Length: 86
Image (cartoon, rainbow, N blue to C red; front, side):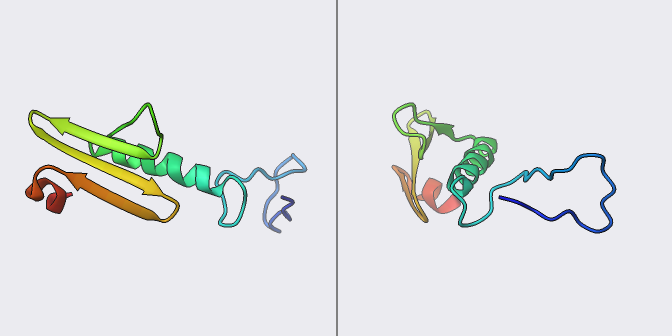
C-alpha cells in the first residue's frame, strides 16, 4: 500500500509505515484477532493450542469457552452466572 506523506510531516525518510491493519486489507483479520486475544488475555482467558480462535478459562469446577469465527462469537460455560457475567 502506498501512502502520501502528510504536508506537515518533515521526516528524513521517503516512506511511511502503516502500523495497523486497515479494514479490507489481507492482514486486517490477523491484526484484529491478535488484538482480541491480547484483550481477552487480560480478562484471564487463555488460547487453546488446538485452535487460536478458541479461548478458555477454568477455575475449580467452573469453565468458560469462547469461540470466535469471522464476525461471530460463541460463549459456553457450565455456570449460567459465569456466562452472564462475562
